[in-house]
Amino acid sequence: MYCIVMLSSFFVIVACVLTAILVTPDYIEPNWSFLAPLIILGLAYSVYAGALWSSIPYVVKPNTLGTAFGLCTAI
Image: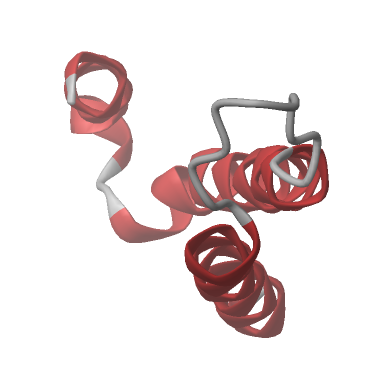
């Protein structure tokens, strides 16, 4: 599970770097180069959120599990 979280964090960094490199302000023609980093970011976040939600019961005591899920939802 830690490998999945680290891999998705790496893909978030890759998406941010690609956004900084590929997306340039071009006011004459529409620039569609933002789609690839946006798709990578969406996939990385969904994997990260899935790994995060499934790891909460491993870390938190069973009597405070509802509060932990509530805090993660609020944050």
